[in-house]
Image 1 (cartoon, rainbow, N blue to C red):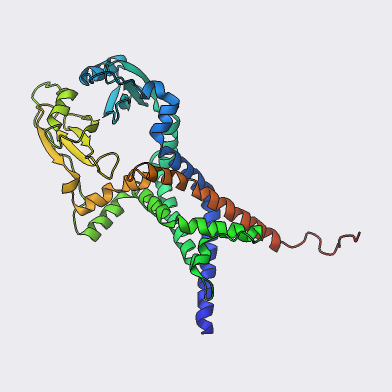
Image 2: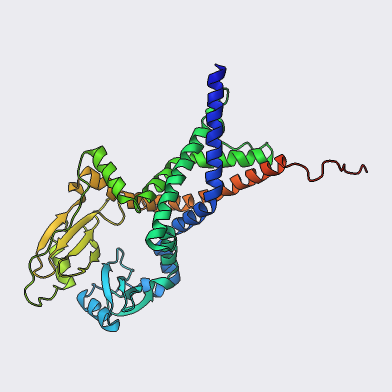
Length: 383
């Protein structure tokens, strides 16, 4: 019995050291990445507050044709290459064309869907929410920063699991004790209780955010795991368009929307991906009413030269593995349950700050209490 207790005590001691030092070493990274991630959950609302003159419009009758707006954007920004058209999901929002200017900088061009007038443009590097996104996803370091974030997410997973293992009560202690804060105790006990209770109450959603965050830099292991667990294919591809003859131009964006309306006619389109070269195709994304993913998960591919519907990739027809992988983004950013879920994900962004501040205070107090006196032979005067 004593050997078993000793082994259990040694394990808890090891978990405690692992938990403490991962938290202290990665604490600043955890706080900054989490805060930036929490804020960009409400990216559209922040954009509306800062740049409402570009993102908001006054509804005024039927919407005008899309192609002339796109042509104006190309004319006013010579050399620009656009990748996507973001269609408004509400009547008071502008259309935006996203791409890169002649110098390769990411930027948006906004247009009024009712008048067709261009409202202006904004480089992404002057956009606070774009900066927050790039910091959160890549630490402003491109692919290398994304890999660092992925490794940090794996360490964060260990931190969360070790915290749960430490929370499991010893013999004689009630389970509920680890979920509340003792208000009549000293500050160190209250701080410890706060750290433990906040960590346990938010463990499951935090674990969802952390694990799904690791997916983006490490997609291949996740694809293998999803395929293995569901025994289905995770591979996805895009259908090639038909052959191009001579200098056949692209069909108009309005024609693309017309062709895509034959599939899921009750689901409005919210996004168009433009062909990158002559071997690509238009892709229209639609969201069905009541669909759990805010962005929509139905993709319709249209031939850019003859206007044929090449293929409809409907979420209801995807394999289990594909559905699992396509759930990673909405689970990570909280866009799967309406405003309430987004508010919860915003609050989750502040949880690491509470945990790190409380752990830092406890560690500093413990370090001071165990530090030897600077001159133990000198006694204080008696007054």
